[in-house]
Amino acid sequence: IATAQSAWQVAKSLIENPDIDMVVLDELNIVLKYDYLDIEDVLATFQARHPMQHIIVTGRHANDELIEAADLVSEIRPIKHPFKSQRVMAQKGIEF
Image (cartoon, rainbow, N blue to C red):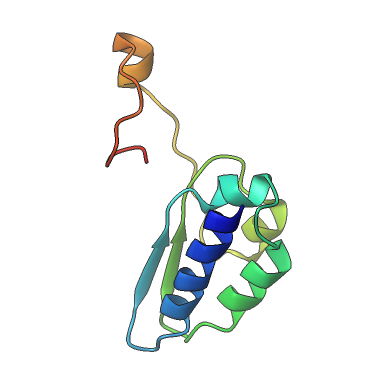
């Protein structure tokens, strides 16, 4: 939880920087699912971003409030994945 909260502070500083046009928050949905971060803080931070900044959130189990607040929501489904077909475990630098 402490690591997620620390990473969120870094993310917030990037979101608050008007010189940054895009922020990618990989697997934030999982962090929110397990309540490691306060959804209200996340939503308030997103609402306060500068108008042309884009925030991309990835991960399964997207929070309903986050979906409602989003401009665009897409769902990706696996067609082929090395874990299922070849039992390749998560790889450092790829999945984490």
